[in-house]
Image 1 (cartoon, rainbow, N blue to C red):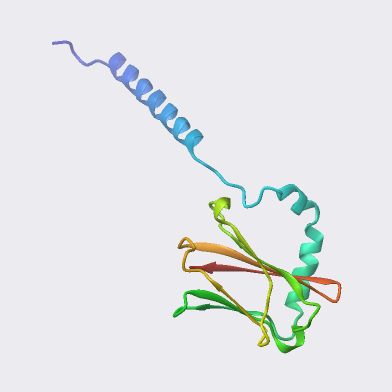
Image 2 (tube, helix red, strand yellow; image 1 turned 60 degrees about the horizontal axis):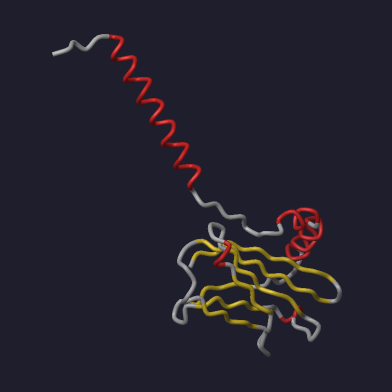
Length: 149
């Protein structure tokens, strides 16, 4: 039987280190990563418009309410009286940060009570970013909320 000496120990330590390093590198290379949006560069260039829209939302006297309706498993968006107008148009976007294939976009269509209900029972459970963007009187408003379904 061969004796275990310091040379064998160093050889085993270096070999284990190399194997561990290669394993971690191959694991990290195999991970899928997703961008929140495919046009992130264009959004970055036009970001001042987004900042202005968010500032307009913060300055509203009565904010737009976004509530989770548990019995119906839906998101209920309610616009205050002051914002209800025929000229109101926009979109509601649900971003899934870890998988852009699950993103969904809806046209803003409020009823006579200033509400829109979006069923979310078929949405994947977890964190979503809801972006509510609307245009009224040639001004753009952008409201972003993190929601958990």
